Image 1: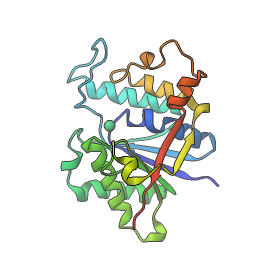
Image 2: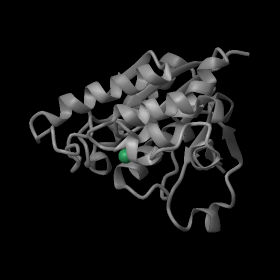
Image 3: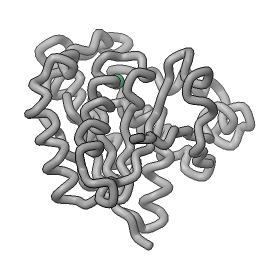
Image 4: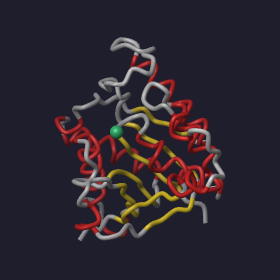
Length: 218
Ligand SMILES: [Zn+2]
């Protein structure tokens, strides 16, 4: 059955390493994917190597990189929500929650993917995940989409246990690498690959599985 998947993340490039392959895989299966990105990452410290962005041009450059990444993955429904980078935790919660709620009401996703609040290292990541689960948690249980969350903090496995969702995305490494490559102000994709190709076992082991924890509301 066709599903609608709603991805909600705070920064352009948050999609690249963690779920570009997963999005490409869902799209290949005929599912719909909407990617809502809260900010333009305009406070990012990286300006490219060698630098080609500056404080003034960075938001526009990152917006283009995000669009290029989505194109590489195949995502056609990209929503840039216009929140300010590095300040998600200080946003008016009611406003943030209402923006998320209206996306959920508009799209009726069966699955929402975000960061696991408290286990995602960057305050924007945690605040984004927090807002998503807070908003969904308020819905009547039978109306709640499933939430798959990405987590990175060192104590994740110790506290949450092993991730319960593993997506094999080896067949989608072309899209995933193109997504990473699109964010050229932030990453040096060529260095990740070195002289290896996408069918190299080391590359497949490193990038070929994407992991998520199903969020439990109880
Ligand atoms: Zn981020």
